[in-house]
Length: 290
Image (cartoon, rainbow, N blue to C red; front, top):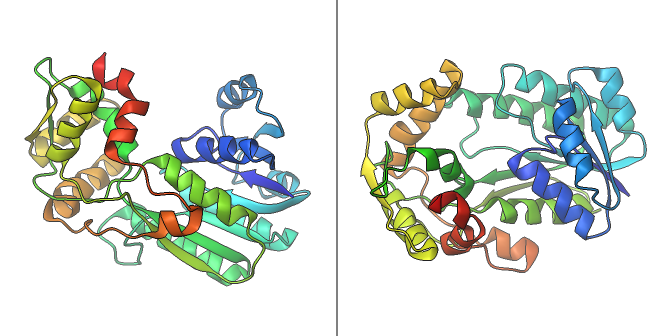
């Protein structure tokens, strides 16, 4: 069986490629950019074929699906995300793919407050209508999200974000990839909707404190306003609509504890406990100590 992995240079897609390669599963790893494809080829992962393609191109996607039994579908939060996902789903159905595993979000619905959640809902509706067996993954806040803010950490160890005292069951992307790999190899029929979390609810303050303990550097959280966050986030080049969505997620949802609550799904699917924030910190110690 060969697995098509889209978004193969991304946080989760890249880990899915590596996990499947470790398990001797043949992979066709797809990226949109040629330079990302070249970087992936340079890793020389056994059994991994790398391609670059525009997922909006139905002909190109159909060619990518030759001899493919399962698809891991993840597309970056870009303006044409839905078009790309619809293209892959329709081609997968036509090709008779056994299962599509889609990375989605919690709270996907047509009237969700986040544009990205509305887009994911529309893609899920397309998947449901396609008649392909599917698994929808709904992970909690990625621990890796904290990595994008390491440049904001002050010499004192202070990091300001608009998360308040909201607790969330942060998850390591390695656990998401592990669940995806199991689902991609599953040949049973039927659809599954899996909520994935880490082992505990953590506030941003608790997470930073634990990371600091693990890497040997004092780190602490300071609350920020939505306006200040947007100013800094936009200055880094993020698109305004995307930045507004992230600000709403942090200040309008997570701050108020709406993301709290753990599940045991990672252990049930993979057989191992979800990684802790300390495990994550040790994996990325260099990023938090530079």
